Image (cartoon, rainbow, N blue to C red; front, side, top):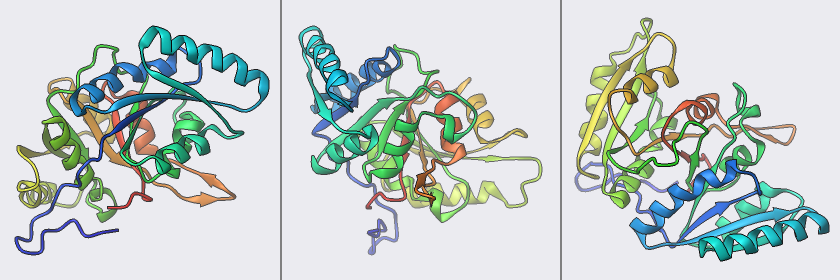
Length: 276
């Protein structure tokens, strides 16, 4: 992982976003189309092209998806293609990896309380690719606009803070402010106000404006962020995934999964595999 600190000034630096293609995975379901309005906004802001893909595991599903994607091309005026593959997540990750300048924007069904029930394709893509991906959860309204700020969620660990160069880069890309937030419970021992002040100081030269907030909530991170969003508008949230392998399984962190499931804004996920 490359150092994102400016050696001369000691300040942090945003990770520039290479945006040439917005990749929208579809599966024929109504839910998967929830990502398209957000993808259109990204394309309009960045000048990137939208590319829709679907993955077919056999001949019959391939024919059905091909007809479906041809209809999307005619109706939406977008590039839409079907890829062969037994595993959709692997195929999607391969496209993003082999096509420089690709931003993944996809919808999640967001079912269940745990990462395992979030939606296996969304989960696996998030932890298989080094490309940050924007996930549109079930609570995001079709008319949501990428305005206001990028809400970067940290928890005092170096691991969580690795989201900040990505969040700052996206704030620059979308011309948004960067808000660095952490959630405190009544049992929090650390002085989080000093911590957040330090984060703002380190990142205020990376993008503008930068602000920080300690959100006090006895329930948890998602509840605290939800309460904050009830009174403040943000374009998207940013968080890291916790990818780990066990018996060949890839797992998304429960906090990231809960944010996707409950927040009314898209969530930008950064995998530990991401190369900064």
